[in-house]
Image (tube, rainbow, N blue to C red):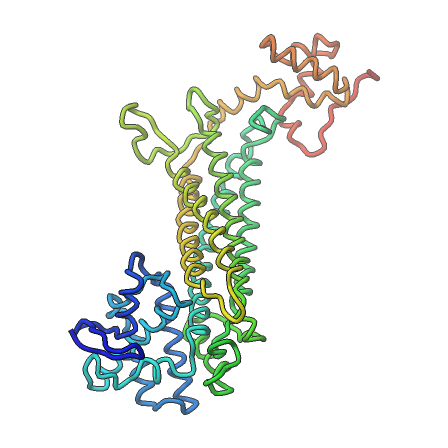
Length: 462
């Protein structure tokens, strides 16, 4: 063990640890139970690289120190084992910021010929120069969130394409529609999948557009957004450098105090994740319903079997990919509550609960990326059971709906009720009502019934 000192006094740190006194105290205060998301770590390191470069350009630290810091950032993955703080540690992200500062400082010290703990490069005076956790941490959260968002948008686009391919493939598969779990009027299976594709397309567009909302960062605002202890040009230069490094068009927030104080943008972003999650659950449950059975249920589509479904019922197959997607989406929906609680719990010039915002936001990104992949894999491999679709349609008394303009609502309701109660074909009952067989057969052609604005030719004035 080596001895280090901070404002609280002396503390022991493992000899080989690249972290220092602040991190050692953090571990004691907040025993690590969770790991920091690698996307956040990468973003924090990128921020530190940009800050070192900017500080050197503006004369705030020596070029030699800056180069050592930048070199440390470039090979920081080698020392990732020393990112040891729990992501939900108290302090609005200060624990994580200092963990990064200490690791970079010790590695930079080595690069300059010193030993771990010598601090030829100081965690605060050099690595954290012109910065505060309060601008570094939220900026890094946004950089990582944009990268995760782009991955999610790509996966949503793939799901949309898969659904559109099924829309085309099932264009001629006529089936009965359903409302409130009961038979409704005819449609095609392709139309059903086309509706799913449209819902996912909306999610794709919303998520694509919301990136604009998280490109605005407060880096350079330091403690509360006034930019104290940072050169006037710092925020402009550092954001340009960071943008070039991460290849994201970041923008300096117009009001750095507001951007430091408020975190509602994260509630906005997560609200759209929640919206996507609701569509994932809805579509997945529909596919479970349509594939139910196969003999004792709807059975209009067949899902690919990916694993044995039961430890006792041999040969049983379950919709496990859909169940997986639903559970992940449910978890994301639950995360939205945590995000909202954390966002509105900020006080005055800072939100101390940014760690929870970051943790749940990234968790939802990860879960929804997996959920969308699972749903797409299921969609890609499912098949239509055309014969079952036709059988279910022909048994439905709701075919008679198209005769409401001709016979009137009450008369058709009487025929439908009789068909259901007596288990007789609704066509027979329509003919018995006085309509000709040709008229009934012609009017009940499902291909005609799915056309927009379909009304059978009126044959009398009843």
